[in-house]
Image (tube, rainbow, N blue to C red; front, top):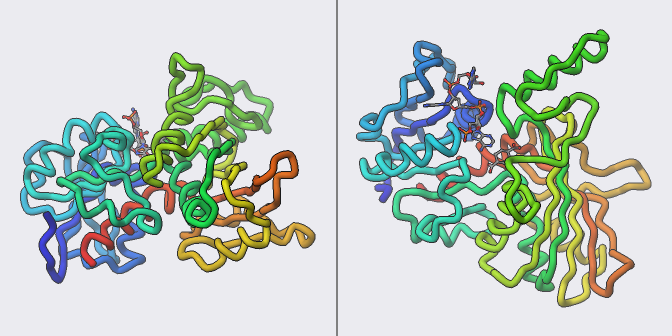
Length: 337
Ligand code: 25A
Ligand code: L14
């Protein structure tokens, strides 16, 4: 467990990736009490450096025996690395905050969005899981609505940016757009189809039930974070040619009736949420404006006229920040509070 200190030795595993990079800059921005920063990636990145508070920090190769003395280890190097190295880190006394899906549904691992269920941090045993990006931005506004009116069912469709897949996918979208506009041939590499000027109803791999893993993560993680197995969830996850921010069309049915104005009032007072909802003035959340922001933006709040107690809304958040790196750093902040 973490002992109270003035400054902590913090590691970022997968530091050269899209999420890892963001973790380093968020630790700096929020002035997290870092005594020493250790950066890890694969052999490929050996010798490269990343600046932290104006000073270059060298990237080291990840090995089992590097964790001695590290207080907090933020992992974002893919699921396999988390399975392979998080237990060794926890055994060495580090608290691991893991961004992959490897440990999320393990009953001995808390799955935490600080604004929603920071109480679950109490029972961690060395590994804490950071939820899926699409799930984080959905449960953040839905939890206070659930507390007020009990959500019975959620129907969600996502519009997910390519940065969720990592740096390679961001480069691929850029290259395909350039190729398309110059009448050059496009050869997909990261995704099974062209992503430029297209939408792919396919994120992560397909399961026997016809859903993707990403869709089932939204179902199972939502229930675990909200602490309510009775909530029914169905999801369709779609990759869109956007660089940063995931958007979501969310429909909920509640036990108690809520008007659109009541929902706006509930959400307006909550930390981490911005109600951005004046459609007559063309005001609604957009990925290009929410990119780089910490808050989750909610708009297009309206009553679903096809059912008795239903609400529709449009939710946008920066998937690399609240969806990944920021949420992980906020968990670390709670731990040292
Ligand atoms: O293994 P998985 O489960 O399939 O998942 C790996 C993918 O998950 C992304 C990650 O993006 C990667 O594409 N990812 C991780 N967490 C995520 C999250 N929460 C997530 N996506 C969404 N949500 P990435 O490429 O941006 O970051 C990868 C980071 O992990 C480091 N890493 C990889 N293998 C490692 C390792 N670290 C330690 N030990 C290992 N064995 C990786 O470091 C990076 O920091 P790197 O040194 O390998 O990357 C340096 C540059 O090389 C590029 N690159 C990555 N893979 C390849 C590659 N270049 C060529 N060929 C490749 N196969 C990276 O873009 C990086 O810039
Ligand atoms: O479970 O957009 O963290 O491809 C990693 C990949 C979330 C989605 C996870 C993507 C996923 C992400």
